[in-house]
Image (cartoon, rainbow, N blue to C red; front, side, top):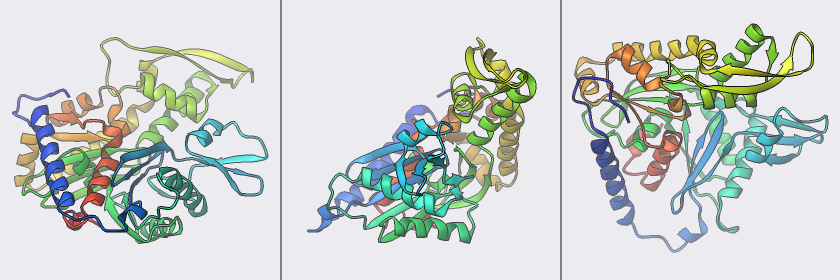
Length: 370
């Protein structure tokens, strides 16, 4: 983690210490409970149902599943694969196959496809064939509507869950990052996922103010597709654009700019073509969307009560989610806000780790549930 301020922010060691304390406290609660006689027959799970990736954690085994949120159907409408296998088929199918990404902007857009996908993924996450899902904790965007909540709950119940709990994504990310969510101390978390960017200030087990911006990793990928079509007359697919973003994408200039070869279809000649592109090209493509994310963070800071703003000045902003891995995004935010900015340890799994912590001790985290 890199600090970009002269203030005295929380150090990496302090953040790890806080995470360890939360983990120890949680384990103390969980270990104080006696396992029921029939607990071995249940497989309680926590799900980060993301636009791009779905991660599943269980009480006993931690994170057991992490694959793309994609499902493939045959011409009769029956599911044939999901996750990584379906992702390999994405944008390469024939008339007898179709792939579906059931989630859009962090919420379920295709109810039936989401149900089939969740059912298959939960089955893969089960360690024993005879176990059933008694409790399920799912994280949802902070700006979710009642209709969208109902869609999530119904999909989970149809996928086999007896009892469904929901926790807001920024809260789950904050818990997963080891922030002191129960204390009278302000913490700011920015969770940049595939469909939404969740910005929240958290204190006393609640979200003081939050903003759910339906602009995140997927929008950056679309920006790259449109940029190369407009500027270079090259049509590339979603998977290629995603690879470009991950490998050479950046939010501000790099010490040494990167390059890579990409393949697509020349829109003028109509034939396949290879093009050498640089990180400067990609930065130009995504600059507008990155600016909107940074401006949203500034807007949330303006709406923060002054006492909590002082805490954030001391403790900084924590980034989580796959978008936090965009090169130099932390530097860009730090330069714009003047605050220290940290990337959570393993930002891709912060949300599911936080959701798993809630599952481990529902009573301790009862106040954070939706």
